[in-house]
Length: 138
Image 1 (tube, rainbow, N blue to C red):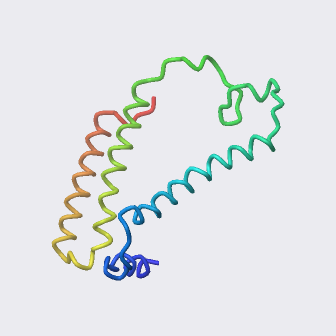
Image 2 (image 1 turned 180 degrees about the horizontal axis):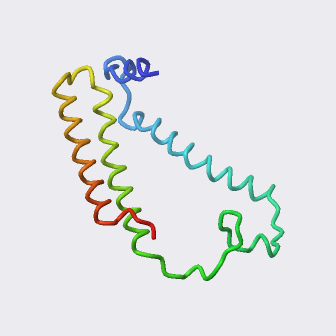
Image 3 (image 1 turned 90 degrees about the horizontal axis):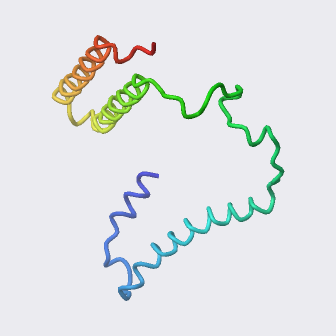
């Protein structure tokens, strides 16, 4: 698939016959219309085929198959949010390793050392968060 996309991106404007300025926007408008029609069509078809019988069990809050305990507006510990934020921060930082892995052959030893330094910084951050007690659930 990648060679096909690369080939299509290499084609220049001289390969296509002369068109008006509006003709270049037709594929974009078509893509927009299709991307709008699919969810609207699915919701419309679903409205006709689904059952609308509301029972007591169906109107009950769902909590992983377990009957809910307490109020949904109860306070949640700040540690939960800290762990979630730490996960997002470190998860997003590890996404930066993907482009490095794609061009690993071109970077040679310099790229390897750079990635090891990056991973070492992440490990130091995890160690700091662990020592501060940010990863403790209780």
